[in-house]
Length: 127
Picture 1 (cartoon, rainbow, N blue to C red):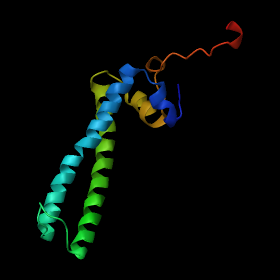
Picture 2 (picture 1 turned 180 degrees about the vertical axis):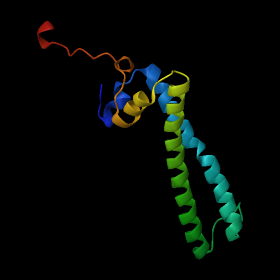
Picture 3 (picture 1 turned 90 degrees about the horizontal axis):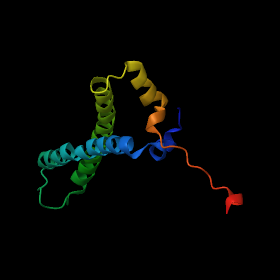
Picture 4 (picture 1 turned 135 degrees about the horizontal axis):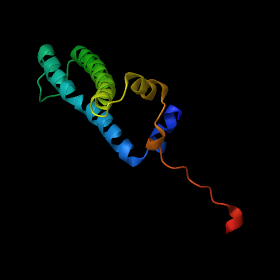
């Protein structure tokens, strides 16, 4: 079943939604480790004490631009890596074909058994 990207999280059963979201979030939050290391390295490179505030305006601007740029790249890379990890798990652990993984990742074709059963709308005449 092909779903719009915005409806995916709401429609997935909890047993499929939880591990996928845990993988995405853990990879994204893991990107903070290299970001913090980058901050220490940048501070040392620019002569900023690690325990103090950035007082020099020229160093502050350079530090903020480089740090935020690195942080954005690290977070996007980690987010992308989580999809590669998910594809690897689906292929090697569950034996999915490359075509099936491609349809899931790029075309949002979710296997029907991953979706929640449709909710019945209450019938006003039954009250």
